[in-house]
Length: 596
Image (cartoon, rainbow, N blue to C red; front, side, top):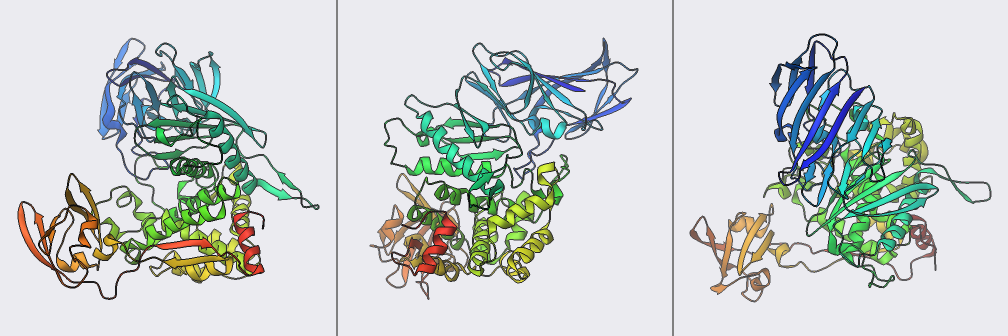
């Protein structure tokens, strides 16, 4: 067995003390730390935070040779256990790495736990040792022997499981509920007084029950829904409430979340009111929970055996992240947390994000998946022109497939996912699929080949037929007049009376005028501009306009010509007030709300 002990000794220096014990090591034992964490597709070089690494066998010091940026070789002798001691600096507040200060601790095993190469399939024990007074421990890893605070020993079947159970340490709020009989727990760090924990639990329960039913629900002969048990015996949500920050990372029986504390539900807020910030938090909870099935168990074939030393490429993130992004908000309406009108506003937001990205014409969503390691996680001022998000466009691909299947009447995307789950063996820990597997299930359940659609929507760069597909479901598609930024063809930000361009969109008026990202826009037709709304009264779009801009302390005089044709505005989606009965039935079945 491989054993780790984690001690919290120096919170002010943000250092974890780690002791790793390897029974019967190889004569030349290699040890390495992952360079990335599954679910976040960027090489992050966690080893840069390790320090003071020493090795012993009994009372003998053992030579350690560093072989590369994250790998060491211990030259052992005899049969005695190898012990390594080191420290890890932890001051990254994200969900991907590790954090430690006087208020809170958090870590993923990929940041702290050296991998004993060749021994990854053995059981791995992790012991939480020294903790500050009154700190508690929360994790989904199975406990072996722990005290009332959670301090003690935990056991994972192998290294993959070890690093798939993050730990939350500190003083935090705890709450519990059951979803279809399965225990779920919520821990929240950083919540202010007045936080409505009961509402968070009740709303999260509705999300979890809706998703378990989606994946494991079956109707009996009488039409009664029967729900099978999900592939986990318990589940843990770990939420860090901060002043700013938003994100999540999925794990096999838990998720780590970060959100602004102002978005937490408040006790004084009427239950019938759902503020936008809290709605965004519920969408995040829904997204990460859906990943418990889609990517943690049903996964790309390339992820069935992780290589922790390098990038693990796949063209399927449009499916695993994009389809999850489709269902995260869809589940909210099916669970009764939002109505159809508000859901369609959320969907319109996604549509506008994609339509406002010129990069959709330059890169397919399959290529965007493959390039996640170098593009999505490393955006720059030109990303909007050169790439497309596999989250947002992937979710719209899912929408197009679902609406097509539903209109043709043979199956739904829900049914396709359940069949992929069954065939892949995901519940047994297998679950690796490729695009051909998806096409096979689509053809068998949908009654025809969907290869042309996937070729166009996933591997092509043309527009998706969104308006054409939404109409038969009783959804109005309406384009608004373009706002200033759309007419200029730029993304802008103003601060302290200074208006700067963050990105210049490909083919827009700003690019044709010679503006570049980082330019400060000073005046239009001799009138000072300090914010985007100043461009209209200054006559920026009434005809050819003279711009005064600054770049690298130099003034530039440029000519702005109005776009011809004028760019389109934002799309608005809404339910048709009186759709045809067939359209009303389709919409009700799709969104899971009964017709009224």
